[in-house]
Length: 231
Image 1 (cartoon, rainbow, N blue to C red):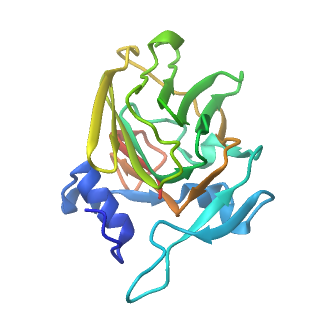
Image 2 (image 1 turned 90 degrees about the horizontal axis):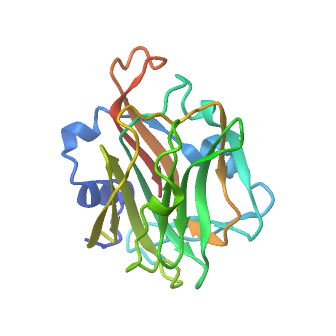
């Protein structure tokens, strides 16, 4: 399952999410790190060796190393030009946080500065989610106490939000589902910024995949299926 395959993105997508090939092909792709201009190597971002350091038939994987106290942001509307964040979605990442670190990786804030969505890596990872009604309360954010992602090793992590649950899958093996006590008709505002937070970490590459109800009209509301990839 964790062989260094040449088609690394597909190797991660299929085993971790159990998506059939035909479903994968219906998604439009959005490169998140490209939106955040990682390819321009802003201050604090450098290139390093990625998940697979040795390959038989090709060059080793490369990764982005992000230094401490670095924040890279973009208007959320650049990721969602239609202005609507999907209700159900998945976030995938291949990541190697610094040992012992506890910090947010990716966050979405509205124009009032409310932290609406965040993925906190480290020991006992937290998935922060706050909809337009303020639900769930901070004490009810999904907390995964039995996991430790800040052990200095590479991990493949998927967080899937569906209805009122948030499921985390680590290295395609450990799977934990927690309640997500959000509203029945929830929404996340795109009138704000998406931030790659201060975090000593390494990343491979990134793209996002969005499935719209009408692929010829991406300004329309996307369907409930959405995946954000940070490989």
